[in-house]
Image (cartoon, rainbow, N blue to C red; front, side, top):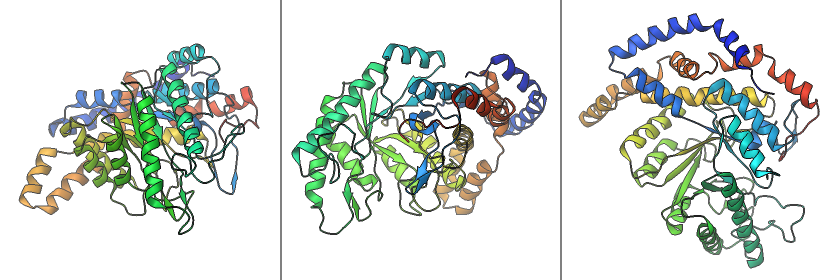
Length: 426
């Protein structure tokens, strides 16, 4: 289904006066502080977050999956769902495909459908963390790091095939996440595993077109619990340097041990010009893949402080790729994504309100109290009217979640697709 513009506008009319009042109040207050309101709105409107193709259905845990009615059963339906998100928020203008879960049957048709929704194809993602039904060999003991040369070749070829698919769609980057690792001491030789991985990544990098980027993820544990081959940002950074100038580290918020200072990692990578992308989610214990901003909103804000600061200071760092990487085990997936998109924009807006000049001055004077006051003043600002104004000016919804529910979108999807559909890849 598609969101009809006339019905969307009708929903907006019920809320527009309150928005105008709230926006005027916030804008007047911020203008007195020297904030360029129009510039801030423009940056919010330009900020687009990719939706992964696997996120449109209900995710699960290692113990089970509780499906959600009306899930998309094809790539075409997934893009339609992203179209719903983008129509409401005006900030979900990209899709990130996971191969082989979502290989287009008709490239021209799928590109046209995406274009009709105002959606571009962002990074493509390979999958060597599970065996495919037609595979002659197994990734049971590793893929790009495997001690078996033929398995490594199979994994490299898969990534090369993913690049070829992405090239047909207009993508410009490949994301590699490895599940490779061990569960027991002595199971694998650490150095050989790392050297094999480096060699495999170099081969993939060599296959990519000259205008493509390689994003290398890291994760300290899961599905292996004694070691992972690319366990932290330093290992990813080292591998990216080994591959070349167009290889970068990708930071996933959930891929860290508890209490890791992610904002410091972001600052370091941007200083070195090696932060390529960012995957948003939230967590309490580990890689929980929860709704963005639902557990640690202040941490998200501090990370965005470094991202915004880095985008201004570190011109050597490339334009960043943004994506949500979350699981929706008990929520309506589209409602969860709407909440995540709002949380991302909220943290981004608040970070742009930080008076960096005053913060730098306070830092130079060692005024720790004032540093905290400057950060928390921005964090405590209610920026929701700014987000709504930015959306509405582009034709989006004043309140995307409220409008989604008022229009009974999920019920209409169920009527179209049925109750027992299962999204591909889940």
